[in-house]
Length: 169
Image 1: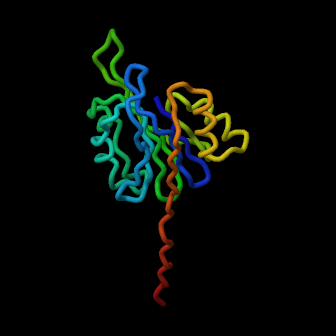
Image 2: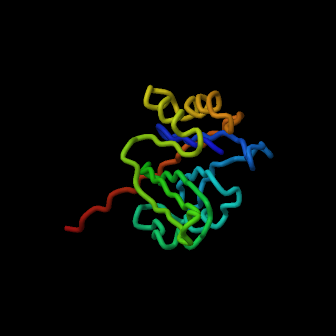
Image 3: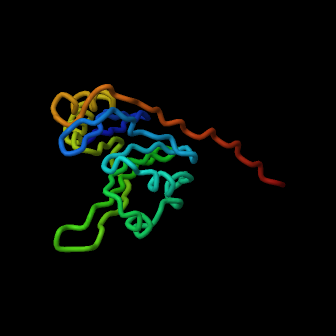
């Protein structure tokens, strides 16, 4: 039970960690990956395997395949923002009761903002109305019983521009 939102170079999240409708502790849900991307997480509390899979992703061509995601077999939702600001949503869902197949995928978000978790609808509506990611998470906290303050934020740090090579004459 979570709310993670991204807009205008800032990712924000609530800090509630719940199990069976009981708030167990407060935790951060945003991570800066070694490749420079930022990742917000919802779902399984122990998601180190996903962070390991994404640790060096800098561009879309480095993203994992659907099969690589599903092989993790973890109930998970992630909001990934690459160093140049492209936003991706990834998810892995447990099999339904009549199936043994995990489902999931990864897709690029076509908007300039996005949110995941149980508070996502409130956060998306707030950002649509001009609120920041931080304010959007606070809006979700006010309305979603499983989201709690304090709110953590993390800025995206864009890569340094490389100087252009001069052509030889």
